[in-house]
Image 1 (spheres, one colour):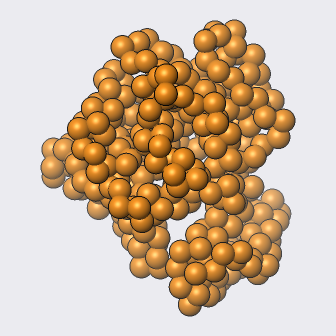
Image 2 (cartoon, rainbow, N blue to C red; image 1 turned 180 degrees about the horizontal axis):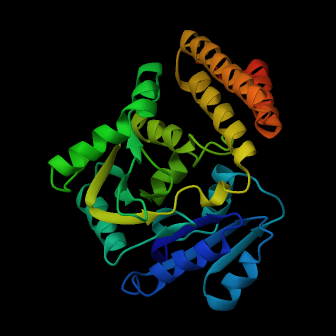
Length: 300
């Protein structure tokens, strides 16, 4: 492979944030033999022109329709020549030295297949970007308690976190190129969300560790890439959640999850109806229909 590093950025209508991400990268990684590939998921905001104009050295891969996060990354990596791959969201800022630190850590610990930084919100607060394998009990912890718990641990440890985890957020992580190809990359049946937890599980099934470190940090303007498609994002998130359970968990857990989700979104639909909120009524109705119709293609 010709380069040390290939940076893959998937973009969908986040032109200003994408340029900001590239601004935070380009001058700070000159000491690394690298290439940057931006995969554009059929943006309509001028993202492709903006990148080509300001950063002509960046490899721009425009797609003719939105294929989702997982498939877009896989498409970009077809053009990668780096020994390591940095998967990076288009709405991030990368401080000086963070990329180098991730590479140093993965090189010095052969058993680590993925290394990820801590991720922070723009206001400096810690963003939850890791977790345990998704089961019913871990989902409840993740949904209601995890963010407060991990922020408390972060403060208690004075900002130092180094641990092996089950998965890390697709917003930013470094993975060995050879390992990514060995596991077949992201599962493209995840259109949006949960693909990172699935990838992490498959990486660990091959005996590799996933390491989270506070020695590297990034800022993430979370949610910018789905800001204009909130209804579709919610629908795809629930479909991805169901698919993950069908692929990795027991059939009984999938049944319980479906029951819980149907009750939850039926309740939200009823509340929307009482408020006269027709837009959310329609969104929740589509989500309920998807839950009822879900059939897993790969049951365990």
